[in-house]
Length: 212
Image (cartoon, rainbow, N blue to C red; front, side, top):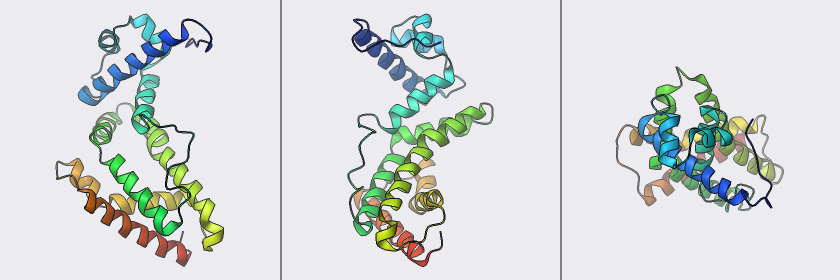
């Protein structure tokens, strides 16, 4: 069982730092070497902790991988706060949401993470489940909540808000994600804005037609 420490425990700060060191070392290992090839013993060495300490924080390699993904999804942000575009009307908010989504999805770390999951998920199916929950599921929940916020005022008839979120992600990434994933050039700021605006216009047309 993973041990936890009360916030007023003198050891809490030290344990938090050790946990952060472990996650940082694991992130480097997983993204550079893949999930299967990464050794928890080597991760512990790189983090400067014993293997016993690593397992006091993470019972399994899967738990450690989940912590890495969570950090990559929101490395420096407060996940309890709504995104900056959340209160914007759809004509503006969808474009800003699309730009944020693309910048994140096309970042070097997210592309590396995708490659790790795609390479190892056949042998470790839990990787795919973790990725869907922590990466795709998290962004889908935020966007589905945004659609709920505006559906009544916009008169949208949405049968499945999560399907609508997935459609928007597909419109944003269409061809572009595969292009960059396979070594093509990264889009510049103008290209990202153009793609986000085009995807937002397409989604608005679909929502106004009541086809989701």
